[in-house]
Every structure is written in structure tokens, then in C-alpha cells.
Length: 195
Ligand code: GRF
Image 1: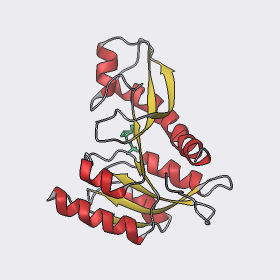
Image 2 (image 1 turned 180 degrees about the horizontal axis):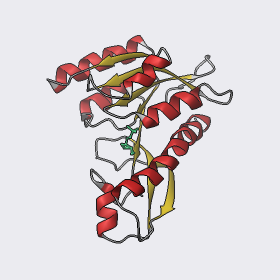
Image 3 (image 1 turned 180 degrees about the vertical axis):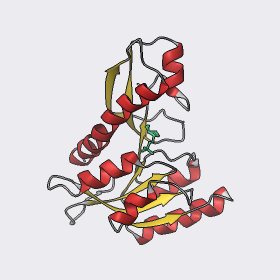
């Protein structure tokens, strides 16, 4: 695999979002810490009204809205930006578009995603309601490599939480977000220090 860090000390990361951006917020915070092996150079959103863009603005991180009217053209634009900003690692954080096989191949570097379930259980959407419906005792979050197969790439880090009888979608989401805000940075650290 190509070296992400090279002769620079930190890897250049692009974070892709579509909405709230609470994971982006925690990644930005972590990236400013002394031990971080990465810096966030670029934020991409497919929604111009993504609330998370405010975190990029606040930290003076360059951001671009790519509206995805046409997948091929949009991915072309994104690839250009990734090149321009010398991005070595993409972190998907609530990005609601599926990257094409061609994009993944062309980028040719690592793409990570954070998914709110204990993969391989509950790939795709609506994870919390499925966990509750099945009365699972545990749920959690997983950081994994992105491959053309949805939510099926190698797991980098996973953490579980207990589902209590009184949990509903909102409380479960809250519990899981709390661990997500820790494990995404931990997973990136783990991944980059193992290169
Ligand atoms: C997170 O739960 C993440 O696991 C999933 O989408 C959610 C994004 O939340 N992929 P936020 O936008 O980072 O607050």
C-alpha cells in the first residue's frame, strides 16, 4: 500500500458528510491534538444545507458541496479535489451516497466508514430500529474499510453497548453516537500506525 504519511508527519484526510456532522466535529477536535496522525484538509458534502458544514467553517477547513445531480460527473469533481488537496485517506461520516466501484478504484487509497451497528449485523439503513425489533441485547458501532460491497469491508475497530429494555431509537442513537465520537479517531490512529 502507498505510504499515507510519506515524509510529512501527518496524513491528509477528507471527511465526507451529508447531515448533522457530529462525527466530523469530534474528528476535527481530535485532529488538533498532539498525538493525532492526521489533519483534516477537506470536507465534502452532497447537501448544501448539511448542518455539519458549520464545523468546517468554524475550523477554517475547506469544504465543497457536490450536489450529485449526476454521479459520474460528481465523482469526477470529487477525485479532482482529492488530488488537489493531496488526500491520502477518506473518512465517510454519515455520507448518504454510495461511492461507485470506479471511484473506489480510481482513488486507490484507503476509505474508512463508520456504521452504527455491530457489523456484519445490520448493514444498510435503520440499524437502531432493527436492533430494537429483534430485541438484541447489544448494539454498537463499527469502523471499517470501504469496498464496493456495502458495509462489508475489513473491520478496523468495533465497540459495543448494552441495549436496555427502556431504549428507543433516540436513546439508542445517543448511546451509540457517544462511542462513535471516540472510536472513529481511535480507528484512524490504529489504521495509520499500522501502515
Ligand atoms: C452516524 O451514526 C454514523 O455511524 C452513520 O451516520 C451517522 C452520522 O452522524 N454512518 P453524524 O452526521 O456524524 O452526526
